[in-house]
Length: 140
Image (cartoon, rainbow, N blue to C red; front, side, top):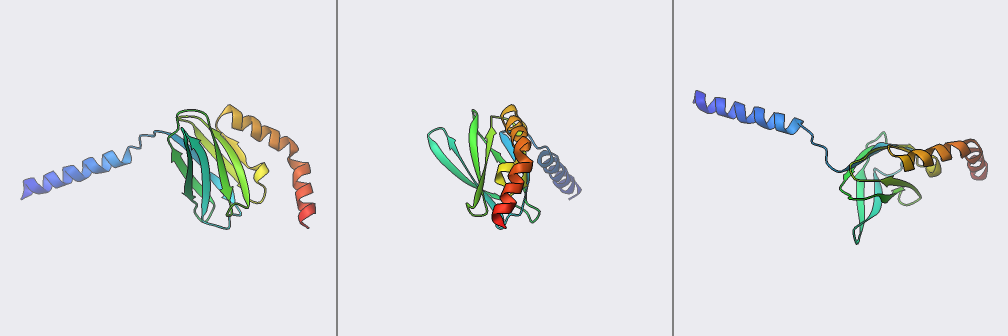
């Protein structure tokens, strides 16, 4: 009986250790998008010869974590608020990217983690003041 209990404890400990080791494989895109009206983001990308569409769950604060397996530089389209707006993310195999912004201003969503996204984010921040003012005045 004691031997059996020890064996169960060792197995549980082994499972706990194995479960806590997160071997990261693939590409990770995580972030936070404010003003989402739906608890999900739809993402599409080309994978080999297939057009892939995934649904990403989003918590109440707009936080999400998306992991996928790609083998080359890939363009992802993130569709927000049931296709009302979209953001583009460029990712390569094994990269970890962060996305942050507002669903009402998809052109100003910041994506960081590789040269392409960093450059595009830098460019969009350069046009930010005029763009936000123009958008607010046309929606008023």
